[in-house]
Each structure stands twice: as C-alpha cells, then as structure tokens.
Length: 227
Image (cartoon, rainbow, N blue to C red; front, top):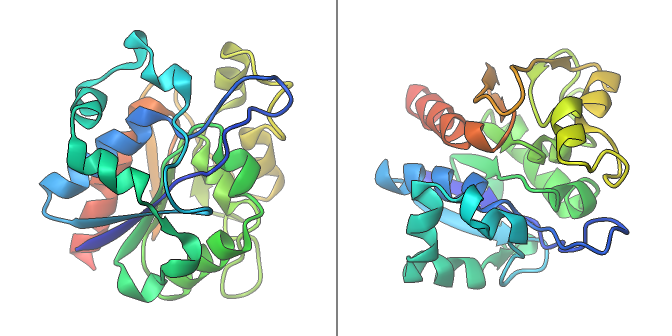
C-alpha cells in the first residue's frame, strides 16, 4: 500500500500578517495511521523541502498523541524537511492521495496545476482522493472525466462557515469553503462545530475539521483494501 500525502508550501495567512501552513494534527494522525497500517508514505509539496507548519497547531492546546509523536520523531521530521516536489510524483505510483488541511492549501493548492493534474489522474484511475478540514479546497478547480466539477453532485465535507467564524478568519480566507463547495453543486454535509465527521462518496473521502483527520485516514485505508 503506497499513499501520497500532499502538503502546502504557503505560509502567509492572506494579508493578516499572520503565518499559516499545514495543521500538524491533520498530517500527524493520518501519517501514523497509514504507517501503522503498513503503508509506504511519500510526501510532496509544490516547492519541495520543508512545508510550513501553522504555528497555532504547535501550541500546547493543539497537541494530540499523534502530534506529540511527530514532534519527537526524527525520521518523520526528516521526511517532511525533504518533501518531494509535485513535479516529481505520479499518480501511477500510488494507491491513493491524501491532502491534510490548515489554511495554507486555500492559497497555493487551489490553483496549482500540478496538484490539479494529480487529483484528476488519481480520479480517472479510480483511486481514492481524500482531504480533510480546509484541504477539500484543493478539489474546487478539479474536473472529473466528463469535464464537470469533481465535487458536483457528490457528498463532500470540509471546514464549515461557522467553524471559520469561530476562529475569526471569515474575512481573511480567499473564500468560505462550505459556500464554495455548495456553489459548485456539492452535496455539502457537516456535523456540529469541531465534531469528528467524515463522508465517503465512492472514491472521494472528506472530513470536516482537525478532529476528523484520523477517521478520514481510516476510511481511506478501508477503501484501498476493498478495491
């Protein structure tokens, strides 16, 4: 089982003056679930090398067993620091792709041509495409094999309008993910704020928030094993 994890290279939170990147829990929990399930994991980013970690996800109140494990894991940190460039990976070499969130992907991966081509290749090969929290933003410009929006008519979840309001970034993000997915014709589904929630629609697997990250990984491995 070979799984590709794609992380952001973007570290500026709009024009707020704050830093962003990927959310540590949303990488760590799936990464270790994949590894502990016997998967081989590769990491890619638009720029290659060290992806930025959202500093808020390094705060004490954001820590989970998975992030504690990550921050003490030299091999995992080395793998992050030497991430492949998106130009160096092919969908043909993997069984699935997983996008962790954080606000970073909303800025660089939404319109990244290599990322979009990668998603579309996984999709056309019938392989699972998974994303959690803000990362379903990477699907916004992706097309299915018929040239339609990949999310149109499909059940999708992601960071909700009310969760964005709760973190005070409604006016900072380039768009509200829930609104955008609905606008594209997705059947947007959600639970209460901060509750774990995952929805699977065929090969598309999405989760609502950081608390959903391991459950998305679990659903992804289940889908791989079933195919």
